[in-house]
Image (cartoon, rainbow, N blue to C red; front, side, top):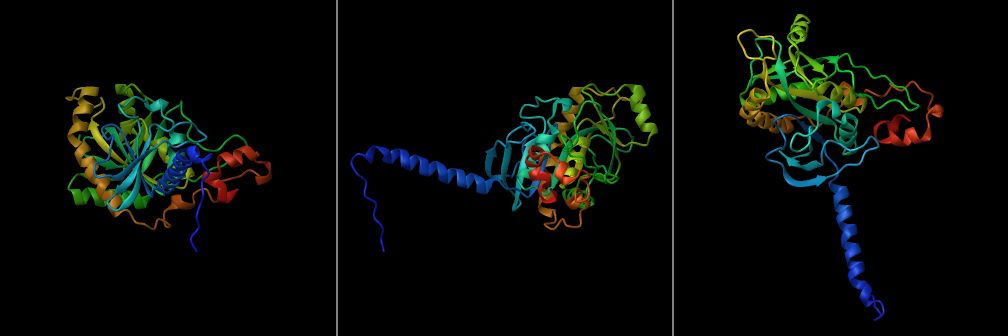
Length: 320
């Protein structure tokens, strides 16, 4: 049977409007289909885009915690659906202390991301970690004081385990990717997360060295905490750019020095991330992050405000 639609002369003027609305609806449906990703990439200083990304669609992601750092570049890399975010925004315009970490990680979760590959520039606290080396830290020390690093609050109390703050599967993937690309990628180490934006004093730098810390940066700990609450497997590829200010015989760290090394090594970072995307296991069920919030919520479900439940549904809906 063939259905026919007759349009009266009085309605002919509405046809272009109807067609336009129909086209707009199809575009919206298409965009909704595209708004899914498996692997998230957070590019730090020196990594503001991801070469090799195809079928790119830029999307603004709304979150109840405000705006993420930048629009997300959604696309395909090495046959995997990925979401790329420039941590400091295009043009590097957001201070570490100004970053909306909650919005960035919430948006990743909203997109369906199950693992995040983070890239970050760091200073070295040990002579063995040379500029242009990569370190994949497995521990953090928090020296920040002006940041919100939890999704809990506003009527809901929760505590996730954080003794091992990064996902061993993602760490393994980064290590294998470094080996494949042929760059120095050191497994393990302690990352000191400082507030900034100033670099360390010499006394601070030597204090952190006395603790046995390996590298120092300004951004990754809050991402790791929030990713764990959001049940996203997370690890950092830390790119050494300088020796902070402790190393006698070397100039104190400067922005010019950091930028020079970043430019030198950004190509290697992009190659490592590309390989890591391809090597990332599709099954992350063995990752401790994937069920981190299962027993985290202490609040009586009946006592949690309805608006808080709605706000956190993307993150904890299955537990509420």
